[in-house]
Length: 293
Ligand code: NAP
Image (tube, rainbow, N blue to C red):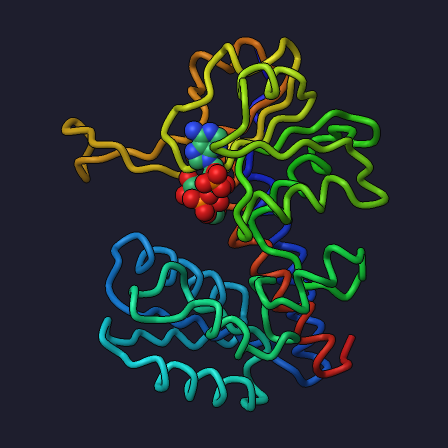
């Protein structure tokens, strides 16, 4: 039987540490503050934004949840970002992705003060990660994956890692994190044009799936004894489920798990870590901006 990498438990431990950091900052006279901006009414985004707001409050952080109508003009969003950049009570700013099509997401990300860019998407933070600058704000999902590996004593140095997906949010930063000194994996990044994906994936001691295709990677993509981190969150119709759908990963868990040394479930694997890392990034941003603790 493979070890199940329990993201809920690891996230709870990370959140408890962050709560202690927040308590110390509050004693020093600062309350970390996170602003989450949602443009439009995408139901999945709404659920994420509400859960981020709830977690902030539970940890004793200041939270501003700003819900804007779907037709909010770009200029208005940029004005809001400028206001949040200047607000001393706010140390982290996140604009929930994806915004409506008329919004230029890259321009919004570039407008965020890089010190408050808790998503790690600003070009200066992308560059800082690539340059192994410790001040980089690192995207929350890949940071959460790395923390899961660490928390479960999965050695990365010298391991062969394959990351399937090359997005700026997950695949590319995941590859950089696995590659950087101290983590020291030998990394391959695969994508939709990769030839013989299954053979590439079977090279992996650590396989990270971030393609956004439900149950796509099967037993033929995984070597015996591999560690599998499934980043995918996909809604699939299920009339028997209370909400008419259920969540599955990018990996066919039932087919793959018997071959693995360890694997993350969906839900309950990477998902809870993303929010825990966001809270941690906000505390880091607060420390850096205020110079406290
Ligand atoms: P994305 O921007 O759509 O990127 C998907 C990547 O997968 C692309 O690089 C694409 O290749 C590659 N790909 C697609 N089909 C492929 C195939 N058949 N074979 C090989 N590669 C393929 O997605 P994303 O934002 O990175 O998200 C990936 C998954 O992670 C989604 O399920 C998303 O919901 C989930 N996610 C989860 C969390 C979390 O908190 N757990 C956070 C963020 C995202 P090309 O570049 O060639 O198109």
